[in-house]
Amino acid sequence: MRGRRLGEQLALLLDGAAARTQVLDADAFPTAAAIAAVLIDHAIPATAGDDRRREEVAS
Image (cartoon, rainbow, N blue to C red; front, side, top):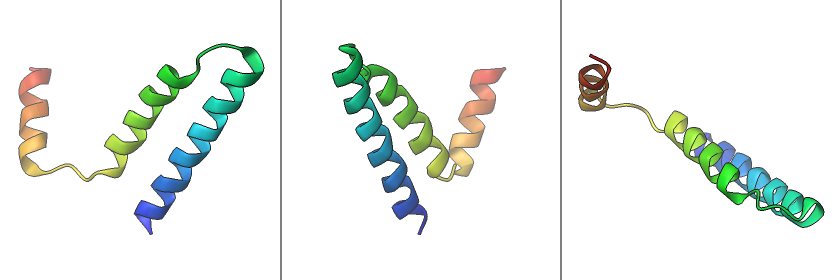
């Protein structure tokens, strides 16, 4: 179920970026890619190793 939701979010994001690019004649895809990365990062559960690496980077 979580994967389907992410897929729908990414599809809507891509559709919106395409529409915005066409209507405003401005490239919205770089912004959409950054948003997609955040959505994907939040959808993937962190592992214990990832948590430790984040703590080391934050220190």
